[in-house]
Image (tube, rainbow, N blue to C red):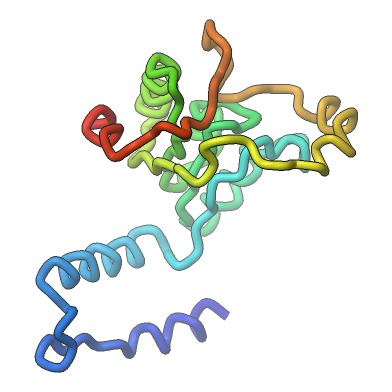
Length: 178
């Protein structure tokens, strides 16, 4: 199926004389995406999904093993069941780390250092959840989820309360992350 999907995309061609928006900056981005396609076996990647142990006992460890078998990129969630170091040890797939901004810079520093020690190749900042939404299923199945969620993964060892999501986050966060 992936080959069938890849073929039409491989036929795309950008001619700067007929497409005025194809600036040199856009063409550099296009070249970067082409390189990522080859290096990470895109378009398939495993997006950050937190607390996978609720679904299966081995959670993110099994995900990493499956991705490693195919060379697919894994993006480890901020809120994994297993620490990112254990996820890294479970396989050889390229590994990136998702970071939710927090008003607690010490928490972000803790998470970034943990991701660095695990050898994550990039950080993906997620700003789509500045506050927790209405998660009714979590209330319906609270007992089952609590029983299954044995670990707090990347948050293990952090001395303070983990405050995930920052509604006041702005682009000023990017220079701090660098």
